Image 1 (tube, rainbow, N blue to C red):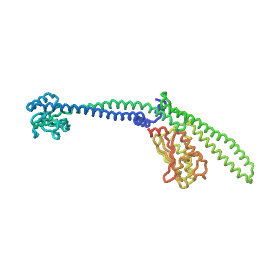
Image 2 (cartoon, helix red, strand yellow; image 1 turned 60 degrees about the vertical axis):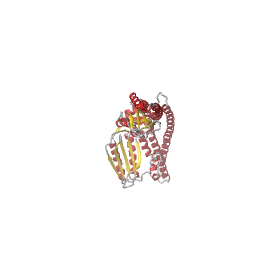
Image 3 (cartoon, rainbow, N blue to C red; image 1 turned 180 degrees about the horizontal axis):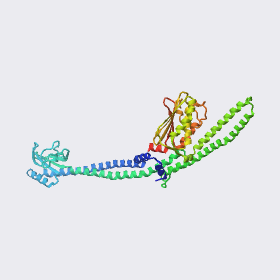
Image 4 (tube, rainbow, N blue to C red; image 1 turned 60 degrees about the horizontal axis):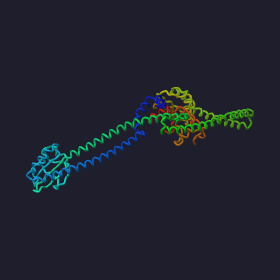
Length: 487
């Protein structure tokens, strides 16, 4: 077992491991090797059935020909015996036939019984000396079940006008068919059952490796590009694919580090001259008299410089939170206490805008998180909700349990976010047409998104009750949520 399998099983919760155990057999039967074996087994069954059918048909045809020849030879022999000796010859032939496969009958020209163990002239049997198959059997005096046993029979008219009937049981032919069908069943069972068991056992190895790859992909999906897919010593197709992906990840990590480094350096390096510029403008403002018209212009320039500095600070803040090494400081926190603090902090601001802010707390488990970052993210959501909710509106802050974690909802009665822009508002500097005049830089939700990605949580924006916006924060690690939902 790979170390990725061990890590996944060790960190997964009991309900997740139970779901994995229940889904494992289904996943095994869906593997490519199992499907290939099933296709091969189906083709084998089809071909074996056709082969046994052909062998059965050829064997039955051959044995039927042999039976017909025996009947024709016996009929030729009996028809050449004198009429007075014919009943004794038939009786002697019956005594020799210890298995009771042959039957004889002699009938008058009008169909009345004369001698033999066939007591009734079979209906539907032409008196032409040719062998026919009688599926309903014949009436015999020495066997009670003969009426329902198929026979091959012929009827021959003798020189005196009497009719001689000879019949032979097809029991041997039927027994051959039974043997062939049993052979087919044994061949299929001895081939398919070991094949299915072997397919299941063979599929477990690749499936285990695929799950190890899945476990390694989870941190990569959360932005940890220094992780790599596991590669075994087999050097097969899965290893070749994993090596290709690892090469791609290495190049992608290099490019991302370079781009991130350039952006961080630009934002960091520009802060120094901007700070100097703000200091010089502030000094110039102090030197300018109160009646100087340039004072308002200088005040406006200082405001623009402060806005630029705030933007660069926000960009560096996002870059800092995208560094996954901050997860080392996570600890279990009480979300109820966190939301109460946020409610108490923003209640005065909401009251100043004539907006009601309501808090609804349900029982929810403690989660592992950075309390300061999570406080910042939820505060940002509440602040936005209050800012865009008109006077007389309501902002609701809710907490409830969800799957293996918790769900936090911030619902407002504001203008709402159009469905086509709900993903775009999480991008840096994006501002919709309806909010361009509002104060801000378009980085608030980007900071929230970075904090959510850092924690491995999920953010969902939808329409609230009666309009407005609902922002749902699912505080469930993505590896647990994906494992419980897709396996």
